[in-house]
Image (cartoon, rainbow, N blue to C red; front, side):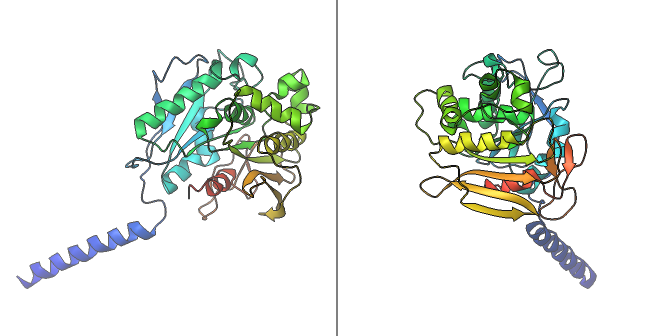
Length: 326
């Protein structure tokens, strides 16, 4: 009888210990899940595929992050490599991962340079907007905490979504991307990528405002990551993104904060009310890709690979913290 009572006490203590550990160990609140494809999410005028990641046991009312892959990538590879799926488990949010089809673009680039794919209600932009609506409905997500981010062509498409559907997104994060309407302003996507377009901040801002006529705000805030040694999307494009979105927010183009993060130049541009409008990270010596920082540390995430560059700073982590996800 005494042995049985002692065994019961040990069982109770062990159960309590497991419960306490689950409270103090980060990432234990939401178990790992698997990527799933969603079909029938809308009329899909851009003929894209929709994938999503929902951590097991995710409660209602949680944020949604839309993560857009770069050229030659796919949803699964970008979601894992960038660190977004890892952070979804750690912090508790769902991820929508649109995927391009080779029938649309032979290099699997989102068509950020095609007028029919970047206008509200049309093409790929409309397909991605439909994915957001489907995800919010399926997981009872927080419509006020939807974020969009992407790399390269996915970064350019991030700017498209912020401009064409500003009411759907609280903020955007762009790695090695381009301003909205850049291909049209430059006369060619390649001129935009390699040289940039000659536009004033007002002209850049007007392109965004024309994408959603009559919209009075609020506009999404923007964070940009750009390698100084990127010869595919030249660093001038980060400057132009800053000019475009500070103008949209009614801010000037003089940084209110200039410091370093993980050793890299970092600037913050505030709107007239003092809120952050645009934030930039200039990654010294980095080529074309998404900054990652593989490892198990608190600020680390991502996996190094093609266009996923280990520079000691994980862009997804920095975005998640700026957006209040973790």
